[in-house]
Image (spheres, rainbow, N blue to C red):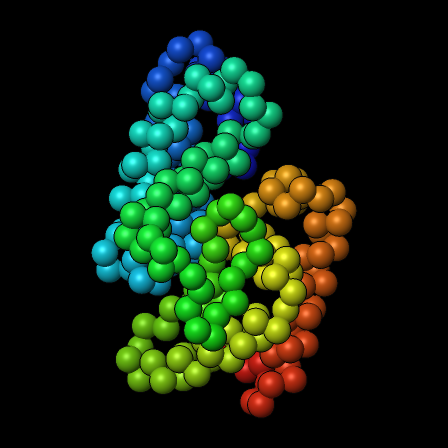
Amino acid sequence: MANDPSDTGQLVDRLRAGDRQALTDLFQRHRDRLRRMVELRMDARLQGRVDASDVLQDAFLDAATSLDTYLRGTDLPPFLWLRCVVSQRLSRYHRRHLGTKMRDADHEVSLYRNPLPQASSAALASMLLGRLTSPSDAAIRAEQVLRVQEALNALDPLDREVIALRQFEELSRAETAQVLGITEEAGAKRYMRALRRLKAVLAAQPGGPEGT
């Protein structure tokens, strides 16, 4: 439902007619995707101090403030506009809590896209593997996360970003192309090539790609 263009169009029509409840409905419609974006791109040093829900709550207020400007002229689709608003709010959290300490942690390679907060390969590796719930699997999972992180670090930054956008933020081909400033065809080719490269790097590592 989050990708239904007709329903999204109806919400935008309601916004243009002055129905402010439509913004709540629009934000709620995309909340899960926006939350995944925050979790992927939030600096690890903020975890435990800032919750993704705090970022989203403040971003919603930002969206309400900038709504009239958006309706007057931007050509961004509604979801990409909200994604931009949320990313700007997340950037403010980073500056407030980390200030000049904003930099990549050791052994991590950041994802490509700017000016969005950068997502680390560690966060992407952890999401790629998913969460193992059994305590007995913790050591195995830690080893797998490290292996996948090393594989991601070996990829071109843009390849990592394409994987993040398509796999975890669940952007469509069109949305991914618009975010990256490339054609849909180029984005689709880049995505498939990135997946093949990641699989090849994993396969070449000691132990192969089992469990990943």
